[in-house]
Length: 348
Length: 289
Image 1 (cartoon, chains in turn red, blue):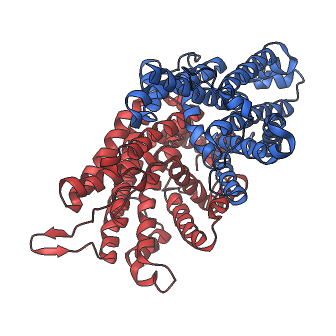
Image 2 (cartoon, helix red, strand yellow):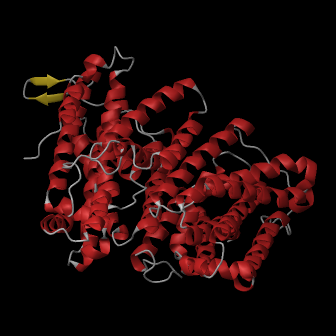
Image 3 (cartoon, each protein chain N blue to C red):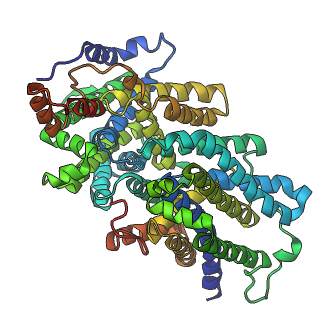
Protein backbone atom coordinates (compact mmCIF):
# COMPACT_ATOMS: atom_id res chain seq x y z
CA UNK A 1 0.00 0.00 0.00
CA UNK A 2 0.97 3.59 -0.46
CA UNK A 3 2.56 5.12 2.60
CA UNK A 4 0.70 8.10 3.95
CA UNK A 5 2.51 11.33 4.64
CA UNK A 6 2.13 12.50 8.27
CA UNK A 7 0.62 15.79 7.06
CA UNK A 8 -2.11 13.85 5.34
CA UNK A 9 -3.03 12.05 8.56
CA UNK A 10 -3.21 15.43 10.26
CA UNK A 11 -5.48 16.64 7.45
CA UNK A 12 -7.93 13.79 8.03
CA UNK A 13 -7.95 14.40 11.78
CA UNK A 14 -8.56 18.11 11.17
CA UNK A 15 -11.44 17.37 8.79
CA UNK A 16 -13.03 14.86 11.16
CA UNK A 17 -13.02 17.35 14.04
CA UNK A 18 -13.71 20.50 12.00
CA UNK A 19 -17.06 21.48 13.58
CA UNK A 20 -15.29 21.56 16.97
CA UNK A 21 -12.59 24.06 16.12
CA UNK A 22 -13.87 26.10 13.16
CA UNK A 23 -16.35 28.06 15.27
CA UNK A 24 -13.80 29.31 17.82
CA UNK A 25 -11.52 30.31 14.92
CA UNK A 26 -14.19 32.66 13.58
CA UNK A 27 -15.63 30.42 10.90
CA UNK A 28 -18.92 28.58 10.72
CA UNK A 29 -19.69 24.98 9.88
CA UNK A 30 -21.32 25.75 6.55
CA UNK A 31 -18.06 27.36 5.43
CA UNK A 32 -16.25 24.10 6.13
CA UNK A 33 -18.94 22.19 4.27
CA UNK A 34 -18.56 24.51 1.30
CA UNK A 35 -14.79 24.01 1.29
CA UNK A 36 -15.26 20.22 1.22
CA UNK A 37 -17.84 20.47 -1.59
CA UNK A 38 -15.68 22.73 -3.73
CA UNK A 39 -12.78 20.49 -2.77
CA UNK A 40 -14.51 17.47 -4.30
CA UNK A 41 -15.17 19.45 -7.49
CA UNK A 42 -11.64 20.83 -7.73
CA UNK A 43 -9.96 17.49 -7.01
CA UNK A 44 -12.17 15.93 -9.69
CA UNK A 45 -11.45 18.66 -12.23
CA UNK A 46 -7.77 18.19 -11.52
CA UNK A 47 -8.01 14.63 -12.87
CA UNK A 48 -8.48 16.25 -16.28
CA UNK A 49 -6.53 19.47 -15.76
CA UNK A 50 -3.49 18.42 -13.75
CA UNK A 51 -3.20 14.70 -14.41
CA UNK A 52 -4.38 14.25 -18.00
CA UNK A 53 -3.39 17.70 -19.21
CA UNK A 54 -6.76 18.65 -20.69
CA UNK A 55 -7.54 22.31 -20.20
CA UNK A 56 -11.20 21.97 -19.19
CA UNK A 57 -12.72 25.36 -18.59
CA UNK A 58 -16.34 24.30 -18.43
CA UNK A 59 -16.67 22.11 -15.38
CA UNK A 60 -19.24 24.37 -13.78
CA UNK A 61 -21.67 22.83 -16.26
CA UNK A 62 -21.43 19.43 -14.56
CA UNK A 63 -21.39 20.99 -11.11
CA UNK A 64 -24.56 22.88 -11.96
CA UNK A 65 -26.23 19.91 -13.62
CA UNK A 66 -25.65 17.95 -10.44
CA UNK A 67 -27.10 20.81 -8.42
CA UNK A 68 -30.19 21.16 -10.59
CA UNK A 69 -30.58 17.39 -10.80
CA UNK A 70 -30.61 17.10 -7.02
CA UNK A 71 -32.83 20.13 -6.52
CA UNK A 72 -35.38 19.06 -9.08
CA UNK A 73 -35.47 15.51 -7.72
CA UNK A 74 -36.24 16.83 -4.25
CA UNK A 75 -38.76 19.34 -5.52
CA UNK A 76 -40.65 17.39 -8.16
CA UNK A 77 -39.94 13.68 -7.70
CA UNK A 78 -39.26 12.33 -4.23
CA UNK A 79 -38.09 14.02 -1.04
CA UNK A 80 -35.11 11.73 -0.54
CA UNK A 81 -31.57 12.95 0.01
CA UNK A 82 -29.73 9.83 -1.23
CA UNK A 83 -31.87 9.65 -4.35
CA UNK A 84 -31.26 13.33 -5.05
CA UNK A 85 -27.51 12.73 -4.81
CA UNK A 86 -27.70 9.74 -7.15
CA UNK A 87 -29.92 11.43 -9.74
CA UNK A 88 -27.88 14.64 -9.78
CA UNK A 89 -24.58 12.80 -10.03
CA UNK A 90 -25.87 10.64 -12.87
CA UNK A 91 -27.29 13.67 -14.72
CA UNK A 92 -23.97 15.50 -14.65
CA UNK A 93 -22.00 12.34 -15.31
CA UNK A 94 -24.16 11.45 -18.29
CA UNK A 95 -23.70 14.90 -19.79
CA UNK A 96 -19.92 14.70 -19.36
CA UNK A 97 -19.88 11.21 -20.86
CA UNK A 98 -21.94 12.24 -23.88
CA UNK A 99 -20.01 15.47 -24.51
CA UNK A 100 -16.58 13.92 -23.92
CA UNK A 101 -16.19 12.62 -27.48
CA UNK A 102 -16.49 16.20 -28.77
CA UNK A 103 -13.35 17.26 -26.95
CA UNK A 104 -11.32 14.09 -26.49
CA UNK A 105 -9.22 14.54 -29.62
CA UNK A 106 -8.55 18.23 -29.04
CA UNK A 107 -5.62 19.74 -27.27
CA UNK A 108 -4.61 22.94 -25.56
CA UNK A 109 -6.42 26.04 -26.68
CA UNK A 110 -9.08 24.26 -28.68
CA UNK A 111 -9.94 21.91 -25.80
CA UNK A 112 -10.37 24.93 -23.56
CA UNK A 113 -12.54 26.85 -26.01
CA UNK A 114 -14.90 23.99 -26.70
CA UNK A 115 -15.33 23.12 -23.03
CA UNK A 116 -16.03 26.77 -22.19
CA UNK A 117 -18.63 27.11 -24.90
CA UNK A 118 -20.40 23.80 -24.24
CA UNK A 119 -20.85 24.77 -20.59
CA UNK A 120 -22.88 27.81 -21.59
CA UNK A 121 -25.56 25.66 -23.22
CA UNK A 122 -26.73 24.43 -19.83
CA UNK A 123 -26.51 27.92 -18.39
CA UNK A 124 -28.98 29.25 -20.91
CA UNK A 125 -31.30 26.29 -20.51
CA UNK A 126 -31.38 26.97 -16.77
CA UNK A 127 -32.00 30.68 -17.29
CA UNK A 128 -34.69 30.29 -19.95
CA UNK A 129 -36.63 27.20 -18.89
CA UNK A 130 -38.37 29.35 -16.35
CA UNK A 131 -41.26 27.27 -15.09
CA UNK A 132 -39.08 24.26 -14.29
CA UNK A 133 -35.73 25.71 -13.31
CA UNK A 134 -36.85 28.98 -11.77
CA UNK A 135 -34.93 30.99 -14.38
CA UNK A 136 -32.58 33.76 -13.27
CA UNK A 137 -33.91 33.64 -9.73
CA UNK A 138 -32.73 30.08 -9.30
CA UNK A 139 -34.36 26.94 -8.07
CA UNK A 140 -35.73 27.13 -4.56
CA UNK A 141 -38.49 25.38 -2.66
CA UNK A 142 -36.72 22.14 -1.78
CA UNK A 143 -35.06 20.93 1.41
CA UNK A 144 -32.59 18.20 2.10
CA UNK A 145 -34.32 15.38 3.94
CA UNK A 146 -33.27 13.33 6.97
CA UNK A 147 -31.60 10.01 6.24
CA UNK A 148 -33.42 6.91 7.48
CA UNK A 149 -31.52 3.75 8.37
CA UNK A 150 -34.30 1.45 9.52
CA UNK A 151 -35.52 3.05 12.72
CA UNK A 152 -32.40 5.21 13.13
CA UNK A 153 -32.76 8.73 11.73
CA UNK A 154 -29.75 10.86 10.81
CA UNK A 155 -31.22 14.33 10.50
CA UNK A 156 -28.94 16.11 8.05
CA UNK A 157 -31.05 19.25 8.28
CA UNK A 158 -28.76 19.90 11.20
CA UNK A 159 -25.70 21.72 9.78
CA UNK A 160 -23.13 19.67 11.63
CA UNK A 161 -24.73 16.38 10.64
CA UNK A 162 -24.84 17.57 7.04
CA UNK A 163 -21.14 18.37 7.29
CA UNK A 164 -20.48 14.74 8.15
CA UNK A 165 -22.60 13.53 5.23
CA UNK A 166 -20.50 15.74 2.94
CA UNK A 167 -17.30 14.49 4.58
CA UNK A 168 -18.48 10.94 3.94
CA UNK A 169 -18.96 11.74 0.23
CA UNK A 170 -15.59 13.51 0.21
CA UNK A 171 -13.87 10.40 1.56
CA UNK A 172 -15.54 8.20 -1.04
CA UNK A 173 -14.57 10.58 -3.84
CA UNK A 174 -10.98 10.80 -2.62
CA UNK A 175 -10.66 7.03 -2.33
CA UNK A 176 -12.01 6.54 -5.84
CA UNK A 177 -9.66 9.13 -7.28
CA UNK A 178 -6.67 7.77 -5.36
CA UNK A 179 -7.33 4.24 -6.55
CA UNK A 180 -7.76 5.42 -10.13
CA UNK A 181 -4.56 7.46 -10.08
CA UNK A 182 -2.58 4.54 -8.70
CA UNK A 183 -4.00 2.20 -11.34
CA UNK A 184 -2.65 1.75 -14.87
CA UNK A 185 -5.42 4.09 -16.00
CA UNK A 186 -4.04 6.90 -13.86
CA UNK A 187 -0.51 6.27 -15.06
CA UNK A 188 -1.72 6.44 -18.64
CA UNK A 189 -3.35 9.80 -17.96
CA UNK A 190 -0.04 11.17 -16.75
CA UNK A 191 1.72 9.69 -19.77
CA UNK A 192 -0.77 11.46 -22.04
CA UNK A 193 -0.20 14.72 -20.21
CA UNK A 194 3.56 14.42 -20.53
CA UNK A 195 3.69 13.40 -24.15
CA UNK A 196 0.53 12.65 -25.97
CA UNK A 197 2.15 11.76 -29.24
CA UNK A 198 4.50 9.30 -27.60
CA UNK A 199 1.61 7.63 -25.80
CA UNK A 200 -0.14 7.38 -29.15
CA UNK A 201 2.91 5.77 -30.75
CA UNK A 202 3.02 3.26 -27.93
CA UNK A 203 -0.33 2.08 -29.20
CA UNK A 204 -2.57 3.72 -26.60
CA UNK A 205 -5.95 5.00 -27.70
CA UNK A 206 -5.27 8.37 -26.08
CA UNK A 207 -8.65 9.77 -27.05
CA UNK A 208 -10.48 7.05 -25.11
CA UNK A 209 -8.34 7.67 -22.04
CA UNK A 210 -9.05 11.40 -22.23
CA UNK A 211 -12.73 10.60 -22.59
CA UNK A 212 -12.59 8.39 -19.50
CA UNK A 213 -10.87 11.15 -17.53
CA UNK A 214 -13.46 13.67 -18.67
CA UNK A 215 -16.42 11.44 -17.86
CA UNK A 216 -15.17 10.39 -14.43
CA UNK A 217 -14.16 13.91 -13.56
CA UNK A 218 -17.53 15.28 -14.68
CA UNK A 219 -19.39 12.67 -12.64
CA UNK A 220 -17.52 13.44 -9.42
CA UNK A 221 -17.92 17.17 -10.04
CA UNK A 222 -21.67 16.59 -10.39
CA UNK A 223 -21.63 14.82 -7.02
CA UNK A 224 -20.15 18.00 -5.55
CA UNK A 225 -22.91 19.97 -7.26
CA UNK A 226 -25.68 17.90 -5.67
CA UNK A 227 -24.16 18.46 -2.23
CA UNK A 228 -23.87 22.18 -2.89
CA UNK A 229 -27.53 22.48 -3.86
CA UNK A 230 -28.57 20.74 -0.66
CA UNK A 231 -26.21 22.81 1.48
CA UNK A 232 -28.06 25.99 0.59
CA UNK A 233 -31.38 24.31 -0.29
CA UNK A 234 -31.09 26.47 -3.36
CA UNK A 235 -29.32 26.55 -6.70
CA UNK A 236 -29.03 29.26 -9.31
CA UNK A 237 -27.69 29.62 -12.86
CA UNK A 238 -24.51 31.03 -11.30
CA UNK A 239 -23.65 27.42 -10.41
CA UNK A 240 -23.48 26.74 -14.16
CA UNK A 241 -21.71 29.92 -15.24
CA UNK A 242 -18.24 29.99 -16.81
CA UNK A 243 -17.07 32.29 -14.05
CA UNK A 244 -17.44 29.37 -11.64
CA UNK A 245 -15.50 27.19 -14.10
CA UNK A 246 -12.72 29.75 -14.08
CA UNK A 247 -12.81 29.92 -10.30
CA UNK A 248 -12.35 26.15 -10.08
CA UNK A 249 -9.34 26.35 -12.36
CA UNK A 250 -7.70 29.17 -10.43
CA UNK A 251 -8.28 27.31 -7.15
CA UNK A 252 -6.45 24.33 -8.59
CA UNK A 253 -3.59 26.37 -9.98
CA UNK A 254 -3.29 28.35 -6.75
CA UNK A 255 -2.95 25.19 -4.69
CA UNK A 256 -0.75 23.34 -7.15
CA UNK A 257 -2.13 21.32 -10.02
CA UNK A 258 0.65 18.72 -10.04
CA UNK A 259 -0.14 17.53 -6.51
CA UNK A 260 -3.13 15.50 -5.48
CA UNK A 261 -3.96 17.75 -2.52
CA UNK A 262 -3.06 20.98 -4.28
CA UNK A 263 -6.65 21.77 -5.29
CA UNK A 264 -7.89 21.42 -1.71
CA UNK A 265 -5.32 23.96 -0.51
CA UNK A 266 -6.41 26.35 -3.27
CA UNK A 267 -10.10 25.82 -2.51
CA UNK A 268 -9.59 26.55 1.18
CA UNK A 269 -7.79 29.81 0.51
CA UNK A 270 -10.19 30.87 -2.24
CA UNK A 271 -13.41 30.12 -0.36
CA UNK A 272 -12.20 31.75 2.85
CA UNK A 273 -10.88 34.77 0.93
CA UNK A 274 -14.11 35.14 -1.01
CA UNK A 275 -16.19 34.84 2.15
CA UNK A 276 -14.05 37.42 3.91
CA UNK A 277 -13.62 39.86 1.03
CA UNK A 278 -17.26 39.91 0.01
CA UNK A 279 -18.21 41.00 3.53
CA UNK A 280 -15.42 43.59 3.52
CA UNK A 281 -15.80 45.43 0.21
CA UNK A 282 -18.11 45.65 -2.78
CA UNK A 283 -15.10 45.44 -5.07
CA UNK A 284 -14.19 41.90 -4.08
CA UNK A 285 -14.49 40.82 -7.71
CA UNK A 286 -11.54 43.06 -8.59
CA UNK A 287 -9.56 41.57 -5.73
CA UNK A 288 -10.32 38.04 -6.94
CA UNK A 289 -9.29 39.12 -10.44
CA UNK A 290 -6.09 40.57 -9.03
CA UNK A 291 -5.50 37.25 -7.28
CA UNK A 292 -5.73 35.52 -10.67
CA UNK A 293 -3.17 37.88 -12.18
CA UNK A 294 -0.74 37.64 -9.28
CA UNK A 295 -0.89 33.85 -9.09
CA UNK A 296 -0.28 33.49 -12.81
CA UNK A 297 2.64 35.93 -12.80
CA UNK A 298 4.26 35.02 -9.49
CA UNK A 299 3.23 31.51 -8.38
CA UNK A 300 2.44 29.51 -11.51
CA UNK A 301 3.29 26.25 -9.73
CA UNK A 302 0.93 26.92 -6.87
CA UNK A 303 1.47 26.85 -3.15
CA UNK A 304 2.31 23.17 -2.90
CA UNK A 305 4.65 23.64 -5.86
CA UNK A 306 6.74 25.95 -3.70
CA UNK A 307 7.56 23.17 -1.28
CA UNK A 308 10.71 21.36 -2.36
CA UNK A 309 9.80 18.09 -4.05
CA UNK A 310 10.52 14.97 -2.02
CA UNK A 311 12.27 12.04 -3.60
CA UNK A 312 9.41 9.60 -3.63
CA UNK A 313 6.23 11.12 -4.91
CA UNK A 314 3.09 9.25 -3.98
CA UNK A 315 0.71 11.87 -5.20
CA UNK A 316 1.93 12.07 -8.79
CA UNK A 317 2.28 8.67 -10.39
CA UNK A 318 5.13 8.73 -12.86
CA UNK A 319 4.66 7.52 -16.41
CA UNK A 320 5.77 3.90 -16.75
CA UNK A 321 8.15 4.75 -19.59
CA UNK A 322 10.02 7.25 -17.49
CA UNK A 323 10.27 4.79 -14.61
CA UNK A 324 11.93 2.30 -16.94
CA UNK A 325 14.30 4.94 -18.23
CA UNK A 326 15.14 5.76 -14.62
CA UNK A 327 15.96 2.14 -13.93
CA UNK A 328 18.23 1.89 -16.97
CA UNK A 329 20.04 5.10 -16.16
CA UNK A 330 20.53 4.14 -12.55
CA UNK A 331 22.65 1.23 -13.80
CA UNK A 332 24.88 2.87 -16.38
CA UNK A 333 26.01 6.44 -15.90
CA UNK A 334 25.33 7.48 -19.46
CA UNK A 335 25.49 11.11 -20.53
CA UNK A 336 21.73 11.06 -20.97
CA UNK A 337 21.41 11.23 -17.21
CA UNK A 338 21.18 15.02 -17.12
CA UNK A 339 18.41 15.28 -19.61
CA UNK A 340 16.51 12.51 -17.86
CA UNK A 341 17.00 14.33 -14.61
CA UNK A 342 15.36 17.43 -16.02
CA UNK A 343 12.60 15.29 -17.42
CA UNK A 344 12.18 13.77 -14.00
CA UNK A 345 11.93 17.23 -12.44
CA UNK A 346 9.32 18.12 -14.98
CA UNK A 347 7.13 15.18 -14.11
CA UNK A 348 7.18 15.82 -10.41
CA UNK B 1 -43.37 37.36 -42.51
CA UNK B 2 -42.55 40.85 -41.42
CA UNK B 3 -41.87 39.57 -37.93
CA UNK B 4 -39.51 36.96 -39.32
CA UNK B 5 -37.64 39.58 -41.35
CA UNK B 6 -37.51 41.82 -38.31
CA UNK B 7 -36.01 39.12 -36.13
CA UNK B 8 -33.65 37.92 -38.83
CA UNK B 9 -32.36 41.46 -39.27
CA UNK B 10 -31.99 41.91 -35.53
CA UNK B 11 -30.06 38.66 -35.52
CA UNK B 12 -27.87 39.91 -38.32
CA UNK B 13 -26.98 42.99 -36.25
CA UNK B 14 -26.15 40.77 -33.29
CA UNK B 15 -24.17 38.58 -35.65
CA UNK B 16 -22.18 41.61 -36.79
CA UNK B 17 -21.10 42.21 -33.20
CA UNK B 18 -20.24 38.54 -32.72
CA UNK B 19 -18.26 38.59 -35.96
CA UNK B 20 -16.28 41.70 -34.96
CA UNK B 21 -15.49 40.18 -31.57
CA UNK B 22 -14.68 36.78 -33.06
CA UNK B 23 -12.38 38.35 -35.63
CA UNK B 24 -10.31 40.06 -32.95
CA UNK B 25 -10.30 36.95 -30.79
CA UNK B 26 -9.24 34.80 -33.72
CA UNK B 27 -6.39 37.17 -34.63
CA UNK B 28 -5.08 37.08 -31.06
CA UNK B 29 -5.67 33.34 -30.82
CA UNK B 30 -3.71 32.48 -33.91
CA UNK B 31 -0.68 34.77 -33.57
CA UNK B 32 -0.42 35.31 -29.81
CA UNK B 33 -1.75 31.84 -28.88
CA UNK B 34 -3.84 33.54 -26.22
CA UNK B 35 -7.51 32.86 -25.51
CA UNK B 36 -8.36 36.40 -24.60
CA UNK B 37 -11.06 36.07 -21.96
CA UNK B 38 -10.70 39.81 -21.38
CA UNK B 39 -11.87 40.53 -24.93
CA UNK B 40 -15.29 41.42 -23.60
CA UNK B 41 -13.51 43.77 -21.20
CA UNK B 42 -11.92 45.65 -24.08
CA UNK B 43 -15.33 45.89 -25.71
CA UNK B 44 -16.66 47.46 -22.51
CA UNK B 45 -13.71 49.84 -22.32
CA UNK B 46 -14.32 50.99 -25.89
CA UNK B 47 -18.02 51.47 -25.27
CA UNK B 48 -17.70 53.39 -22.01
CA UNK B 49 -14.85 55.56 -23.32
CA UNK B 50 -17.04 56.52 -26.25
CA UNK B 51 -19.93 57.22 -23.88
CA UNK B 52 -17.77 59.45 -21.70
CA UNK B 53 -16.15 61.31 -24.57
CA UNK B 54 -19.24 61.71 -26.76
CA UNK B 55 -20.32 65.00 -25.09
CA UNK B 56 -16.96 66.52 -25.99
CA UNK B 57 -16.14 64.92 -29.30
CA UNK B 58 -19.59 64.26 -30.66
CA UNK B 59 -20.79 60.86 -31.81
CA UNK B 60 -18.39 60.52 -34.72
CA UNK B 61 -15.36 61.52 -32.68
CA UNK B 62 -16.31 59.03 -29.97
CA UNK B 63 -16.77 56.34 -32.58
CA UNK B 64 -13.12 56.81 -33.56
CA UNK B 65 -11.59 57.48 -30.15
CA UNK B 66 -13.38 54.70 -28.23
CA UNK B 67 -11.85 51.81 -30.17
CA UNK B 68 -8.45 53.51 -30.23
CA UNK B 69 -8.61 53.86 -26.45
CA UNK B 70 -9.38 50.16 -26.14
CA UNK B 71 -6.45 49.36 -28.41
CA UNK B 72 -4.04 51.54 -26.40
CA UNK B 73 -5.09 49.88 -23.14
CA UNK B 74 -4.75 46.54 -24.92
CA UNK B 75 -1.18 47.41 -25.90
CA UNK B 76 -0.34 48.24 -22.29
CA UNK B 77 -1.87 45.02 -21.03
CA UNK B 78 -0.01 43.00 -23.62
CA UNK B 79 3.32 44.65 -22.82
CA UNK B 80 3.07 44.44 -19.03
CA UNK B 81 1.09 41.28 -18.32
CA UNK B 82 0.95 38.99 -21.33
CA UNK B 83 4.45 39.30 -22.77
CA UNK B 84 6.11 37.64 -19.76
CA UNK B 85 3.90 34.60 -20.35
CA UNK B 86 4.87 33.89 -23.99
CA UNK B 87 7.75 31.73 -22.82
CA UNK B 88 5.34 29.40 -21.00
CA UNK B 89 3.90 27.15 -23.66
CA UNK B 90 0.84 26.12 -21.64
CA UNK B 91 -2.14 28.27 -22.71
CA UNK B 92 -3.58 27.81 -19.21
CA UNK B 93 -1.72 30.79 -17.80
CA UNK B 94 -2.74 33.41 -20.34
CA UNK B 95 -6.29 32.08 -20.12
CA UNK B 96 -6.35 32.56 -16.35
CA UNK B 97 -4.63 35.93 -16.53
CA UNK B 98 -7.07 37.36 -19.05
CA UNK B 99 -9.92 35.78 -17.06
CA UNK B 100 -8.76 37.73 -14.01
CA UNK B 101 -8.52 40.87 -16.13
CA UNK B 102 -12.07 40.35 -17.32
CA UNK B 103 -13.27 40.26 -13.71
CA UNK B 104 -11.28 43.38 -12.83
CA UNK B 105 -12.48 45.37 -15.85
CA UNK B 106 -16.14 44.46 -15.27
CA UNK B 107 -15.93 45.32 -11.59
CA UNK B 108 -14.11 48.62 -12.16
CA UNK B 109 -16.61 49.58 -14.85
CA UNK B 110 -19.38 48.99 -12.34
CA UNK B 111 -17.58 51.10 -9.74
CA UNK B 112 -16.81 54.00 -12.09
CA UNK B 113 -19.98 54.18 -14.18
CA UNK B 114 -22.48 52.34 -11.99
CA UNK B 115 -24.30 49.06 -12.37
CA UNK B 116 -27.29 50.69 -14.05
CA UNK B 117 -27.58 50.57 -17.81
CA UNK B 118 -26.72 53.80 -19.61
CA UNK B 119 -28.11 54.95 -22.95
CA UNK B 120 -25.67 55.85 -25.72
CA UNK B 121 -27.06 58.66 -27.83
CA UNK B 122 -26.70 58.31 -31.57
CA UNK B 123 -27.45 61.26 -33.86
CA UNK B 124 -31.20 61.68 -34.26
CA UNK B 125 -30.91 61.61 -38.04
CA UNK B 126 -29.68 58.03 -37.84
CA UNK B 127 -32.51 56.85 -35.63
CA UNK B 128 -35.42 57.21 -38.01
CA UNK B 129 -36.55 54.16 -39.97
CA UNK B 130 -35.76 54.00 -43.67
CA UNK B 131 -39.28 52.94 -44.68
CA UNK B 132 -42.56 52.36 -42.90
CA UNK B 133 -42.82 48.74 -43.98
CA UNK B 134 -39.30 47.79 -42.97
CA UNK B 135 -39.60 49.86 -39.79
CA UNK B 136 -36.75 48.06 -38.10
CA UNK B 137 -34.11 49.18 -40.56
CA UNK B 138 -32.88 52.44 -39.10
CA UNK B 139 -30.03 54.49 -40.45
CA UNK B 140 -27.95 53.53 -37.46
CA UNK B 141 -28.35 49.84 -38.09
CA UNK B 142 -27.34 50.29 -41.70
CA UNK B 143 -24.39 52.30 -40.47
CA UNK B 144 -23.37 49.43 -38.17
CA UNK B 145 -23.43 46.98 -41.04
CA UNK B 146 -21.66 49.44 -43.35
CA UNK B 147 -18.86 50.29 -40.92
CA UNK B 148 -18.32 46.63 -40.12
CA UNK B 149 -18.09 45.72 -43.77
CA UNK B 150 -15.67 48.56 -44.41
CA UNK B 151 -13.51 47.53 -41.46
CA UNK B 152 -13.48 43.92 -42.57
CA UNK B 153 -12.51 44.90 -46.08
CA UNK B 154 -9.80 47.14 -44.67
CA UNK B 155 -8.54 44.29 -42.51
CA UNK B 156 -8.54 42.01 -45.52
CA UNK B 157 -6.38 44.39 -47.50
CA UNK B 158 -4.15 44.98 -44.50
CA UNK B 159 -3.52 41.28 -44.03
CA UNK B 160 -3.31 40.54 -47.73
CA UNK B 161 -1.07 43.30 -49.01
CA UNK B 162 0.64 45.29 -46.28
CA UNK B 163 4.00 44.25 -44.88
CA UNK B 164 2.55 44.07 -41.36
CA UNK B 165 -0.32 41.91 -42.52
CA UNK B 166 1.92 39.52 -44.41
CA UNK B 167 4.11 39.18 -41.34
CA UNK B 168 1.09 38.52 -39.14
CA UNK B 169 -0.11 35.79 -41.48
CA UNK B 170 3.36 34.30 -41.72
CA UNK B 171 3.64 34.42 -37.94
CA UNK B 172 0.50 32.40 -37.46
CA UNK B 173 2.02 29.66 -39.59
CA UNK B 174 5.56 29.61 -38.25
CA UNK B 175 6.55 32.26 -35.75
CA UNK B 176 10.06 30.89 -35.30
CA UNK B 177 10.95 31.29 -38.95
CA UNK B 178 9.51 34.78 -39.06
CA UNK B 179 11.68 35.64 -36.08
CA UNK B 180 14.74 34.11 -37.74
CA UNK B 181 14.13 36.31 -40.77
CA UNK B 182 14.74 39.36 -38.62
CA UNK B 183 11.21 40.41 -37.76
CA UNK B 184 10.69 41.70 -34.26
CA UNK B 185 8.03 39.22 -33.23
CA UNK B 186 7.41 40.89 -29.89
CA UNK B 187 6.40 44.06 -31.69
CA UNK B 188 4.41 42.02 -34.19
CA UNK B 189 2.47 40.25 -31.46
CA UNK B 190 1.89 43.51 -29.60
CA UNK B 191 0.50 45.19 -32.72
CA UNK B 192 -1.65 42.16 -33.42
CA UNK B 193 -3.03 42.22 -29.89
CA UNK B 194 -3.75 45.94 -30.23
CA UNK B 195 -5.52 45.30 -33.53
CA UNK B 196 -7.73 42.67 -31.90
CA UNK B 197 -8.60 45.06 -29.06
CA UNK B 198 -9.36 47.79 -31.61
CA UNK B 199 -11.96 45.52 -33.20
CA UNK B 200 -13.41 44.70 -29.78
CA UNK B 201 -13.62 48.40 -28.93
CA UNK B 202 -15.35 49.13 -32.22
CA UNK B 203 -17.87 46.37 -31.57
CA UNK B 204 -18.43 47.93 -28.14
CA UNK B 205 -19.19 51.43 -29.45
CA UNK B 206 -21.46 50.14 -32.18
CA UNK B 207 -23.27 47.78 -29.83
CA UNK B 208 -23.72 50.55 -27.25
CA UNK B 209 -25.85 52.49 -29.73
CA UNK B 210 -28.29 49.59 -29.98
CA UNK B 211 -28.09 47.64 -26.75
CA UNK B 212 -27.12 50.46 -24.39
CA UNK B 213 -24.24 50.23 -21.92
CA UNK B 214 -24.08 47.79 -19.03
CA UNK B 215 -20.97 46.48 -17.25
CA UNK B 216 -21.70 42.80 -18.13
CA UNK B 217 -22.24 43.56 -21.85
CA UNK B 218 -18.76 42.27 -22.58
CA UNK B 219 -19.15 38.95 -20.83
CA UNK B 220 -22.48 38.34 -22.53
CA UNK B 221 -21.01 38.93 -26.00
CA UNK B 222 -17.79 36.97 -25.57
CA UNK B 223 -19.26 33.46 -25.35
CA UNK B 224 -21.14 33.64 -28.67
CA UNK B 225 -17.89 34.91 -30.17
CA UNK B 226 -16.12 31.76 -29.03
CA UNK B 227 -18.90 29.78 -30.61
CA UNK B 228 -18.49 31.81 -33.81
CA UNK B 229 -14.84 30.82 -33.97
CA UNK B 230 -15.56 27.15 -33.30
CA UNK B 231 -18.39 27.06 -35.84
CA UNK B 232 -16.40 28.97 -38.45
CA UNK B 233 -13.26 26.98 -37.85
CA UNK B 234 -10.23 27.80 -35.75
CA UNK B 235 -7.50 29.37 -37.86
CA UNK B 236 -9.84 30.87 -40.43
CA UNK B 237 -10.67 34.57 -40.12
CA UNK B 238 -13.32 34.41 -42.82
CA UNK B 239 -14.76 31.45 -40.95
CA UNK B 240 -15.03 33.52 -37.77
CA UNK B 241 -17.00 36.21 -39.58
CA UNK B 242 -19.22 33.64 -41.22
CA UNK B 243 -19.74 31.83 -37.94
CA UNK B 244 -20.65 35.05 -36.16
CA UNK B 245 -23.23 36.07 -38.76
CA UNK B 246 -24.64 32.55 -38.95
CA UNK B 247 -25.29 32.14 -35.24
CA UNK B 248 -26.59 35.71 -34.99
CA UNK B 249 -29.18 35.17 -37.72
CA UNK B 250 -30.05 31.72 -36.39
CA UNK B 251 -30.68 33.16 -32.93
CA UNK B 252 -32.78 35.93 -34.49
CA UNK B 253 -34.93 33.54 -36.48
CA UNK B 254 -35.40 31.31 -33.44
CA UNK B 255 -36.72 34.32 -31.54
CA UNK B 256 -39.67 34.43 -33.93
CA UNK B 257 -40.80 30.92 -33.19
CA UNK B 258 -39.50 30.06 -29.76
CA UNK B 259 -37.92 33.04 -27.98
CA UNK B 260 -36.77 31.09 -24.93
CA UNK B 261 -34.40 29.00 -27.04
CA UNK B 262 -32.72 31.91 -28.83
CA UNK B 263 -29.48 31.60 -26.85
CA UNK B 264 -29.45 27.84 -26.53
CA UNK B 265 -29.75 27.47 -30.32
CA UNK B 266 -26.32 29.06 -30.72
CA UNK B 267 -24.76 26.31 -28.64
CA UNK B 268 -26.81 23.62 -30.32
CA UNK B 269 -25.49 24.76 -33.70
CA UNK B 270 -22.00 24.47 -32.27
CA UNK B 271 -22.64 20.94 -31.06
CA UNK B 272 -24.03 19.92 -34.44
CA UNK B 273 -21.06 21.42 -36.26
CA UNK B 274 -18.65 19.69 -33.88
CA UNK B 275 -20.30 16.34 -34.49
CA UNK B 276 -20.59 16.61 -38.26
CA UNK B 277 -17.54 18.67 -39.06
CA UNK B 278 -15.21 18.82 -36.06
CA UNK B 279 -12.81 21.36 -37.57
CA UNK B 280 -15.56 23.91 -38.24
CA UNK B 281 -16.96 25.19 -41.50
CA UNK B 282 -13.74 26.63 -42.91
CA UNK B 283 -11.16 25.34 -40.45
CA UNK B 284 -7.94 23.67 -41.46
CA UNK B 285 -7.77 19.99 -40.87
CA UNK B 286 -5.59 18.78 -38.05
CA UNK B 287 -5.13 22.17 -36.41
CA UNK B 288 -5.16 21.81 -32.62
CA UNK B 289 -6.15 18.16 -32.87
